[in-house]
Length: 352
Image 1 (cartoon, rainbow, N blue to C red):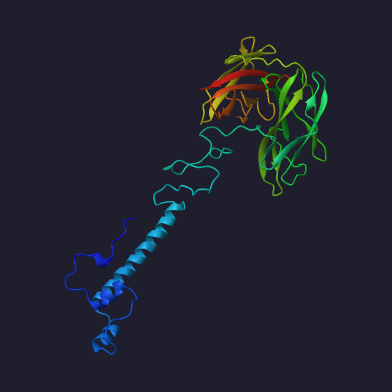
Image 2 (spheres, helix red, strand yellow):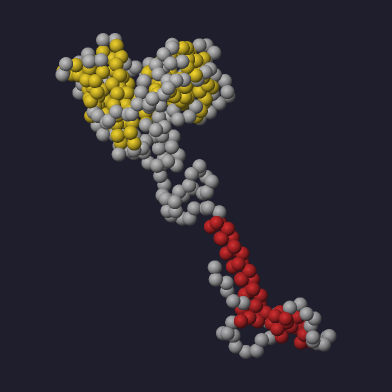
């Protein structure tokens, strides 16, 4: 801010400066007029116009400086300016924005993240105050073992209230770090909140176990979560390369195809069709509340992507909606049921 010059230096004034003005400029030195001088007494009792003008000017300068200082502090404190698009003050959120950013929304579960689908789950053993606590994480290759775990809530006690989603209170997905050896399991829970499931890991390596569930809180609210933990199988680990991307897969004598192109930032439909002997399979059976179940895992960090199915067939196809959280390669696992048996077709997906 440009400072104003003191009024005493103005060049627009005419006539001599009064004695009172000179004394104000000289400061609080003693009066040089003889004691009892009538003129001096009159001048002391009634200030002349110059004195009044000087006092008003000095007062105005002080007020202007104080007002400018106050505005400067307001500007530096992060208060949004008018027309600033609701930019939050620093520290109001857990992320920052570049200047000029207008009002916007972030994807659910990804504050501050780039535009895209919701951030994948299963990347952490703990989220939103809930923690996956296994009794052990070391297994022996090829041996059936009872895998036990609890989900502990914000009160550090085992959770016992779960919503039933896709016909089960908890879904467990197990996969090796090279995205091979897929298993979809349904543990059972004891009264104390301990889950257990028979688990056989066929080969050495590091495996990832996901617990996909919806917890019920004390007020009846529902919180969907996917927590993940690594399991270790000792032995020589030889990772297998991910198969090339393809839209057709074969499993147990069935041919499965899919249509659709997933994108980053928008939910896109995926339609899976099952054939046998070159003909569409008309005898698909409901499985987990729909005619198919789809798990999508991201290569690299094994992020678990949530996929939403349609409850009914669409033109003979099983339809899902998928929003990719980022570009990269993914592995898709499509579960379907025919004649009471569940089959899994696997696809590699590349999202540009």
